Amino acid sequence: MKLIKATEKDIPLIQDLARRSWEKAYAEILSKEQMEYMLSEMYSDTEIAGHLQNPHYHYYLIQDENNASYEGFIGYEHHYEDNATKLHRIYLVPESKGKGFGKEALLFLNQKVRESGNERIILNVNKYNSAKKFYESQGYRVYGEGVFDIGNGFVMDDYLMEFLIHS
Image (cartoon, rainbow, N blue to C red; front, side):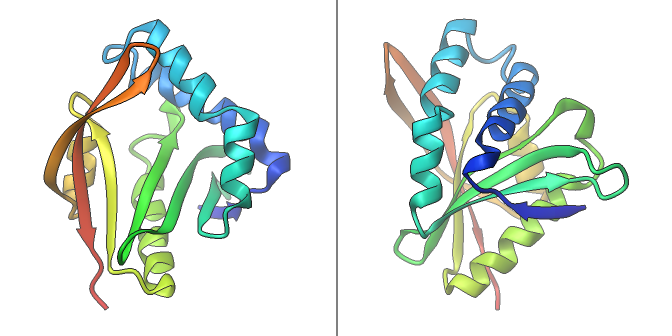
């Protein structure tokens, strides 16, 4: 596996990988309307370009070195909160799950968080998303929950999870 720093030229690829991942991951959790709304808001050209211009926000493409295919991406933001990096996005296309790409991407993130000086990784995960079990298997724990109004009459009903970085 190789992680490649994304640039603005990669926005269409990030959008495609997000859509392919979301259509499987959220098919039974979100309505088609909410999924389309969230994808259009969270993965618009303007939204991603804004992230890429933020010096603390990083996107990396996850590539399978064996066949050079893109398997997913990770997006995170250092110093999101005091001493914390926020894992905003980690998505794999359905055919890539269970092959170790997610674990490797989280190990990569741990290293980047150490380098940033942060000591904690935080994330939100939908309460009905099976990814929660994956995060728990990697040492993350639930420290809270929240319902977040995302506009257009939709909410995100999430667990708040964290991972403490040990030097």
